[in-house]
Amino acid sequence: MTDTEQAAAAREDTAAPAGPRVRGIREGLLWAGGLVLLALSVAVAVTIGPARISVADVWSAVASHLGAGDSRISPIRDGIIWNLRMPRTLLAAVCGAGLAVCGTVMQSLLRNPLADPFVLGVSSGASTGAVVVVVLGVGGGAVSLSAGAFIGALCSFALVMLLSHTLGGSTDRVVLSGVAAMQLFSALTSFVVMTAADAEQTRGVLFWLLGSLGGVGWGDVWICSAVLAVTLLICLGHARTLDAFAFGQDAAAALGVHVGRTRIVLLCTTALLTAALVSSAGAIGFVGLVLPHAARALTGSGHRRLLPVTALAGAVFLVWVDTLARTVLDPQEVPVGVVTALIGVPAFVLVLHRTRRSP
Image 1 (cartoon, rainbow, N blue to C red):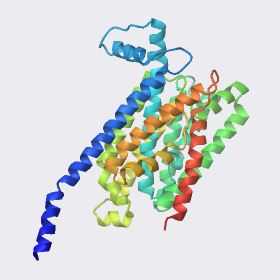
Image 2 (cartoon, rainbow, N blue to C red; image 1 turned 45 degrees about the vertical axis):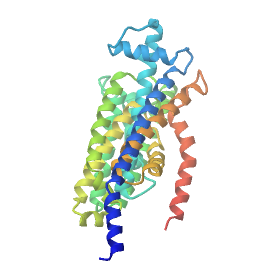
Image 3 (cartoon, rainbow, N blue to C red; image 1 turned 45 degrees about the horizontal axis):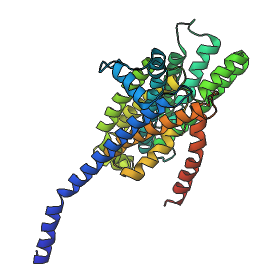
Image 4 (spheres, rainbow, N blue to C red; image 1 turned 90 degrees about the vertical axis):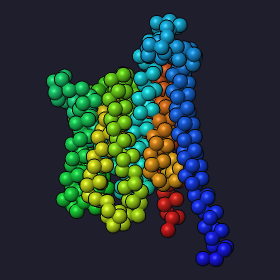
């Protein structure tokens, strides 16, 4: 080795430890900034509405309910903050984070930049389950709309897994099976609504199907948050595996990844999370499609960094989308899915153009 090569090697050895440290600092700042932005977004979003509430009122109510002080606001304002706006805003954050994480995982597993949580037909199955409970009265009142939606989502996903396994289990077969299930359950939903629902039921069901966070409670927040936390931990545990899938399933198998088992575990996990979110908030589209691409522009494709950033981006995004949906036409409320579609369709077209230009 020449003197020049030795000097270059020494410089590389000296700089190598700094690289991970710098990246770690950048990641820490990015995640800390995201958490601060999310906290501020929730606090400000809760103040927006017909009743005039300040950020100080929000902090006072939250501190009081957490046992960190006495509330200085009236019981009416406290009820508006704690029982109405806070659970709705927090569930919006959880749904945004969960749908974005599901989209990230599915796009990696299926190697399809246009995949999102609803490509497996989970949303259509949840819609059918909800309609069957509300319109046909299945369960005799013992089964709620959310429970019916969750059962329908699981049935749809089970059908997709059965079809894809029968057809060979490849990624394109999974996508095609999801499209088939989506069309099947959408047709069943339309059939039930047209033949058995009255005008009031039809209006309520259609509003829920378009995505609605109205009327949610703390129980919905806790359940969806718990499912999101478990899903995020599982996906982070498979971060390196998801990175390997970027090179194709053959390359992943060559790197020691059990492709079939990993795909089933992650698809089942994301499907369960999607089912839980849809059962509480209805069908909210485009979040899982758009946010992963935006997050990749900030962090790159490494899933250890990508997944948390995508979750934070999705949470902040849906908090403000829900705020816009409930205030833009006040006192009338716009379904959240309508607003996400209006924002997501141009982004979807942009993704299509990018994928078309890519080699």
